[in-house]
Length: 193
Image (cartoon, rainbow, N blue to C red; front, side, top):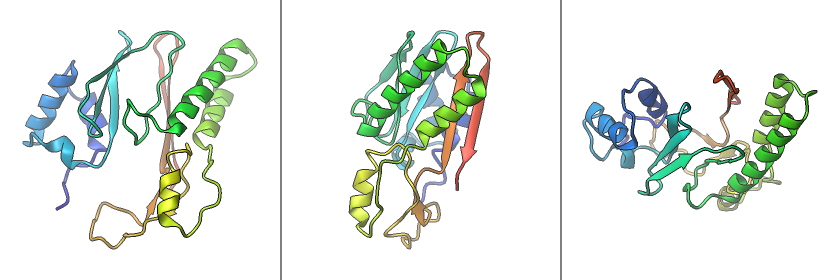
């Protein structure tokens, strides 16, 4: 049975929501979709949401039941992937480190403009350490935990009668969200496939 609710609706549901807390948002989702088990039926996800003014963010995930609260402080970096937030894959640790270095370099250098910084961030998101893709289906998928960018990998069981599943798995979209010191938000997204 295919659930008619895609994880893609969650960010939009949050943006139009009146909810302030994690529990309020979860209750609102359950009510809106008339399903108290909704999150267990959506494909794996980690959703970061919160309040920029108070630098307070929550994570909703169906990877585990923990309640994660993040309060951002200066020079603090967090990454998300398809792993559980409290057990990040190697690519998340690597990405956090590289993001910190890029950000520190940008903040120290008056010669790097916003556009160049954005391109450097897209370069980070395009870091492919997967190496040679082989016919070893399982080996390819086990290695995606280590590469930030996942090139299109043919899905072994594509003909599984799942209308929502594609023939390929990989990085489809890259998104950069920047917030300047005045609270102005820049949202830049690239659709790759």
